[in-house]
Picture 1 (cartoon, rainbow, N blue to C red):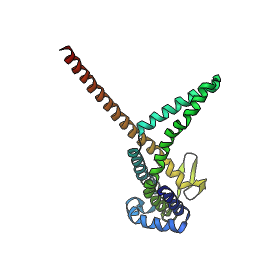
Picture 2 (cartoon, rainbow, N blue to C red):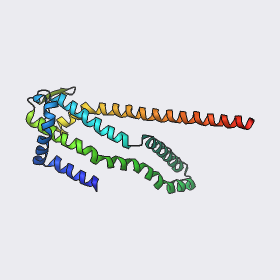
Picture 3 (cartoon, rainbow, N blue to C red):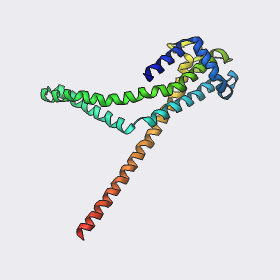
Picture 4 (cartoon, rainbow, N blue to C red):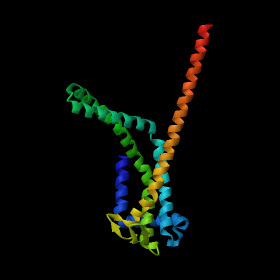
Length: 218
């Protein structure tokens, strides 16, 4: 229910222009003096606000997601699908029947990861939607010049639209690489910590076995 409520509020804010502008004006009281730059550096504004939103959403997701379990489930699902393909190719009906019976359990494991991500959406929307509302006001009302250049177009307009508004596409172009790098860095430290813990547990187990061996010998 909380997720549905958050989605409804977000859709209402994004599609109701008056509500979006009002929310953007409120948020702009705090953001405009910090990253607005008087509307003179819109690309820098998009970059900085994008970094803040990406950092917040990725860090929240990281601390609530079990990346070890997700990797284990992904590996198991990949192996399961391979076995299903092999069973179909070899026409092994007995094996295929057994794998089909196991399929709901495998899908349930995979679904848990998706459910966790959906449960986190209301928390991230609390920050992301108001900032997007302010960015919309900023681009359409505060920016002195909305022209920018990209490799495939030298005179693009932030207020223009190609499936999505150009300023949204520019925001994604600026922030997606940062999000990918930050996600990989956090995963690297998570898996590194897990490996160190396993090594320590292995050393403790070996010490216990050595002590037991010495006591037995005595």
